[in-house]
Length: 412
Figure 1 (cartoon, rainbow, N blue to C red):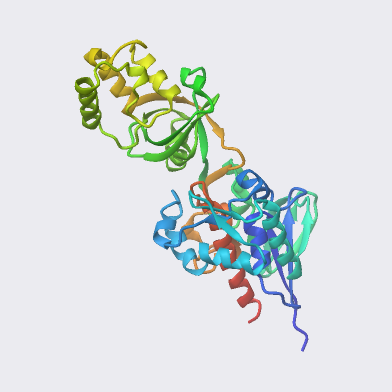
Figure 2: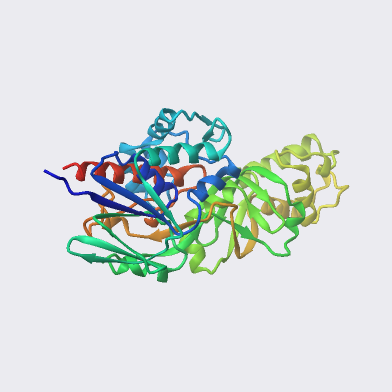
């Protein structure tokens, strides 16, 4: 008996698409073709982590790991049970690629070169018999006699039995029309992981300055994040800002990226605690010049900046500090207001929230609940994680589950 060949089309040669191809079991009766609209595969992997590729995060508790996803937490709690950070480490180890954890938990290849990750995935997908076609931009998918006809912008077509959509997120909802035509609804896209613009703000004079353990609160919301902050020539960046941008992605979009934030330069330090410190300095070290006696772990340039904007003279001593200036300084230390005016994409970390609603896929297989035979993996789903390897882990986990389901189905 001659078995018919099952044709599997993968749309998008990013992290999720390539990892799906790398994990579909090789079978002579199965044809896997990977379509990529550009001329290169795995471009985000190449650029990630400054060219080192932040593969995943050194965190093995599933509940803790899933808490790093502003959207998609419930899905990750399920997918990570099948393929978590430890499984990712093992997968690459089996491809002779070692991963290492840095102090902040981010994991990189021991080689410190993203090409190592690209080569491992690419070698595996080629060994599986995957064919790759570049410059293939999908226009729409037509269903015909339980098959799918893929129509591309160059007028070419391809007939497939199964289709994996792994083309990443789109910035505009109009770009999802071809998926809506398959019966799916779309959660409107919004950028995530961006930095805050402060045009012409005096704080930008401190560009290049990094401040540890600050707290950021978005005005008129419950959103508060913490971490390190970097002052840039255009505004504010660093982990604390990126976390705030992710958790507030929808809110910031609604506010047209014009909003106010408050920064506590001292993390969780409270006003009563600061007043107590100031009182002690006044009583015990009153002769000390304030500019020279910084009681907090703040960079000198920032301390001088705060004193200047609190109208404290550079020769003022702790014992001479007027109540008015002291109150101004306290406000700047723990409730420093900044009027955000726009955003800037953070390096290569362009991520969108929005896309295919999670209610419309089977979390065990990543198959569409609206159209059998269509699968969704990676950022095309309404999932986005914080910076630190979480978005790649979602790509690996969802791709692994889709590949597993397809390997089993086409062997039946």
